[in-house]
Length: 360
Image (cartoon, rainbow, N blue to C red; front, top):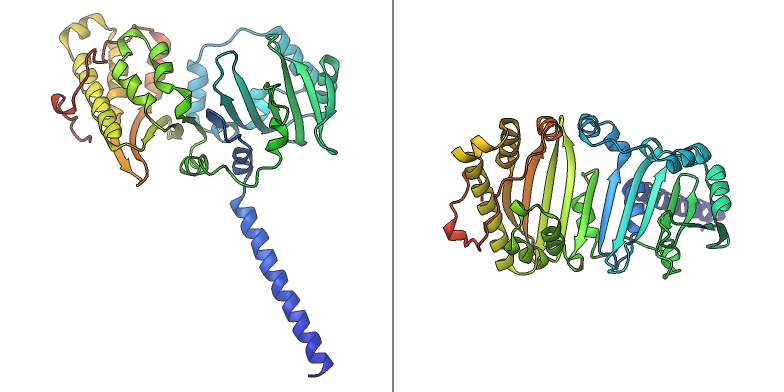
């Protein structure tokens, strides 16, 4: 074979390899995003992960309604000074944040990754003024500053000028190091993160977080249900997501169990609670005792709710969806009535409660 022919073949081979590599790089870039990279850093042993796309939410009409409804916190002099010293205000400059928390009976610990507009020079100077620094790697500096509540210290590092990682778990020095070496999202968390890809705000909670017990301790008396708390504690995973739609917010909560009976009982119980709630709100005595605007707001929320079951093979899920509208927020901001007693005080077998029309 002529030398010129060999040269042509080699050039073609190199060009083919280059084309494949270029296509792979382009494909990888399309399938990787700051959101997925951030979630990939979440520790596998976390009890739960909370994610918010603040940049996406800022353009949603519902967020303005939510800000108007939410109580305005008192100005904090320390935070005002922090903004002045660092130029960073989370309400304006934070775009993405993912927070992993760990169940701990002594104190709450977290690991977080955040993306936004940071002035690294000013923030670094502020940290050194109040704390100290060390090297996380040869290229990345670690900052250590005392926590405001005196419970320990916050450790944080800049991965890039627009991204930081931080934690208050001082007992695991490798936590920030581990975040730098995640090859992919952890296998247990990945399918849940992927299902929630279209939601700008969500939480994923593992079974060890004891969500049912937490609900029982925090819920108002009229909304407490020991049976519901017990069933929630039997779930392997719970996900809660919010997605703005038009001028409202659609909430989707889903519980996963490996046991079909648990999913069936949970679906029956939720349908029963919603049926009793609707009947209670339409009761003549309730009409007399409850503020009309508050009753209408509760009724709107209950009627928008839907319970369904999903079979994914290994897991059986129960999904609850409902809509929060500007009218509901407006009413909630004007009146603060006691919650109606809608939860059953005794176990509710599915056959004892009529199914809601149009719901399963």
